Image 1 (cartoon, rainbow, N blue to C red):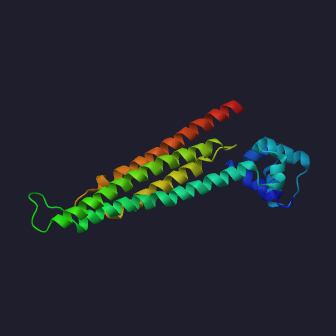
Image 2 (cartoon, one colour):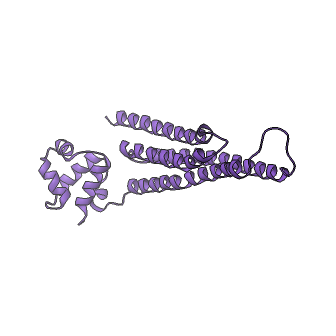
Length: 224
């Protein structure tokens, strides 16, 4: 029970509440909430039960931490970080194959010249691999969005808006960064040819965030 103060602070921050807001709901002063969170004052069981009502958790979670909701949130975060690592790699793979085909095995318009057969075969092979890798990245992105949305919907408490937007921003930066170097260096394909797929992935992520926000709003109405 020595970590009660850290549990109280973590619960408040997870809900993006200020000490003033908690104090108003608790009928306490901000200084009292601050002392509870710093460990300078040990709240009694009645006060801890009131904290549980404000945060929507059990007394056991306040006393010991490590609740089911925390485990669910950690699982969701691990899944989000996995997506953030795997998806840019997939995008870099198909973009790199496309760039390699354009840069090292270019195909000239018009009649095929002597000795160009091998170049054309290599170009076609790389182009086909790039298309397959691009399709795979879209499938992975769609499955990842579905899995993350399902995990988020199963949470006992909603993920803070700031964290949702932060994840979407990181996904946007990583997916675009994975293809932009190849897009800028490609002598044949333009920027739009490389960014359509990442933009679709980002759009799916934004749609998932909107769905979660709608569900969170409906949950909030039911509890009021």
